[in-house]
Amino acid sequence: MIGADDRNQWQLRERLLDVSRGVLMGVVNVTSDSFSDGGVNLLASDAIATAHDLHNAGAEIIDVGGESTRPGSEPVSASEELQRVLPVVTNLSEEGLVVSIDTTKPAVAEAAIDAGAQIVNDVTSCSTPGMAELVAGTGVGVVLMHSKGPPKTMQESPSYEDVVEEVAGYLRSRVGMLLKNGVDASAIAIDPGIGFGKTVAHNLELIGSLEVIAGLGRPVVLGASRKSFLGVITGIETPADRDGPTAVTTALGYERGARVFRVHDVVSSRAALAVTGAIVAPQRWDEWLQG
Image 1 (spheres, rainbow, N blue to C red):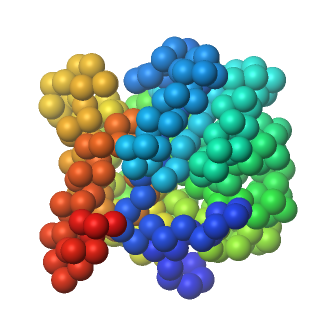
Image 2: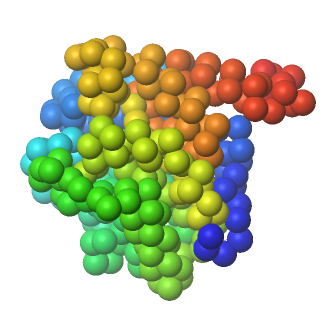
């Protein structure tokens, strides 16, 4: 554990978010090549409409990304990424939605923060020079994620001696790096990086052992939505048809300590959280159902 153990509170730029009952982060990919919704939200108007649908369904955070991180994907320039995401971030922030910018580039993150984004979701755990300093200077919330290699090559025979311990150790070190750079511990959330340089077995072991990651004392973000390992297990080939299996990971993830769930379909995962909460905290079932 690093610092105070408060895995149920997450300090964003403008608000303290209580994640104790589970928070849903709706995915809006303003890209042409994302594995599930590539091309669907490439127009800003479509992305904004999707974000509204997700928010109305119960997503407390909208995660906007302009560069695909699916296995084998090619990077895009900062200017192209900004062209895609900035109109969306600006519009949603002006309307009062909590926006997360999904990027590895400090220039994109800075412009999005200036436009109102309250969270930086970085799949490289602030490895790009300048990102840690930007997060510290702006006071935004930040998601540190584990990934074994860049998206283009991360799924080429990933191997670990102990995937849970190695991922936990990596995240512990990245949290320590941010603390040294002046980021408050309360602003940090951590993500084991399901599907980012992991086999099906690695993903399953990580989800089954999320209490180890949660033991670091910060809110755990779980991003298993529609991913290929669910297709391998269920035989469901089309990503958009994997919302049922995704909801299962939301329920099991919550029970094992995850508190923020990055999903494409909010309705099914919201229901999964409601039932799981009523089961694991029956003394508060009325509060759960009414919340």
